[in-house]
Image (cartoon, rainbow, N blue to C red; front, side, top):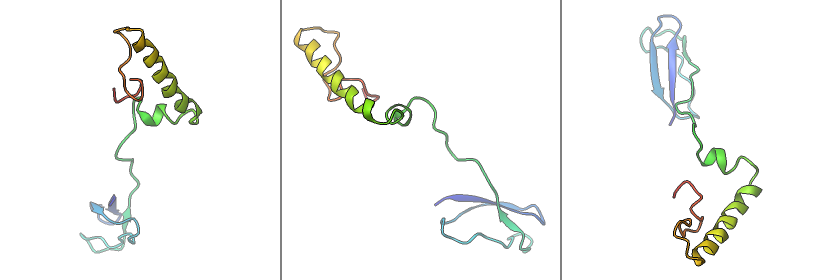
Length: 100
């Protein structure tokens, strides 16, 4: 459930309230009893930063990300058959994903 910030414009009382999205907004101030208790606008509680999956995997439309792991897998199997010790790890993704 989201947490909404409320503020009374009469007395200045502020309170954070956990409510369902479908719940009606509060109107009566718990401090002074006036019907001027209103919901405040606030910033999101998190920010997406860095180069995570949301920025890299789905940015180009999907056609490029589905072919890249296949090409890396074939390249790693070809280099592992030649005996190269510096080859990418033998994983389904070829070691090119963020989990390896």
